[in-house]
Image 1 (tube, rainbow, N blue to C red):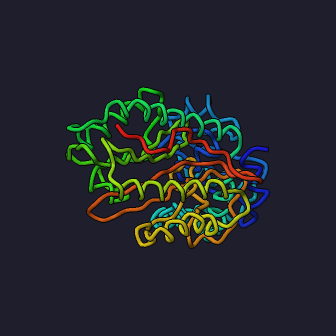
Image 2 (image 1 turned 135 degrees about the horizontal axis):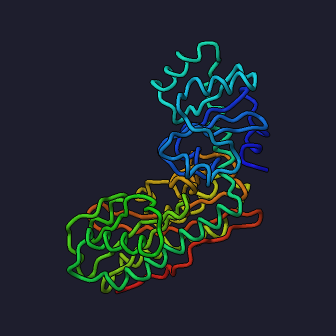
Length: 354
């Protein structure tokens, strides 16, 4: 089945679906562009895209008829009339009020369904990765891990956080990344206590943790990993915190499987950190879904009470952050299966000292 066919198996909220977001347009058509509109009916879908992308679209798109967009609104109206459609569902999570007002003004006889039904249906589809998606995610992770292996030889006292981040980025692109999953995080010393700190001109010093959170994009799909290493030898408190985070992560990885609630998985890691006396220092969720976006559903968090889907890809990333001193985070990401999970992250997690 095509992804359009799967969509209309679960979505019945309107006669057709209008897909305008870049990510979802690429998900359904395989076409990467900053423009274009998909209108999908049960049994037939169309991609209307302007002259800049038309040649590529005709060579790329297989599950939708490609139409060059010259007068978009009249062309859409022709398609609505052709299929007898009286209602159109939009992506409530991404379409702006200004865009919706423009559509409603031109298509005055059409009812626009702007509840969450279409966005929810698409999100549910995207949560469960097929083999072609998993192949891209595995490749993205291979690129990130190969870059990580190389960056360990770069890190030493005197180089800055910013220099390390730039080199890590360069390595990922050199190894085949289409893009970065997000702005690479490289922090050292006391800066590691900020979970999403920004690399600075601070020089790495002996006896400090270096925390790296990064990922590569391959064919539209993201990877995500975090490793914390030490330059020189850690002190006793640093070792204790690192071992606690590692124990929490290993326990969560052992327990992770499809069908359990996201809050249950979060609690397994959080309880270990609580018992070690660091509960107040773990302020973010255990994990999130990863795919065509770096943060997507499902989540492993205290508030996510829904079952985790088989075939979903989620991160497992507990952390402890001692303000003004240091922080530790260890992050893998996994495919959830009926009986457990497949860990896509192969890099070692025992504390590395450089």
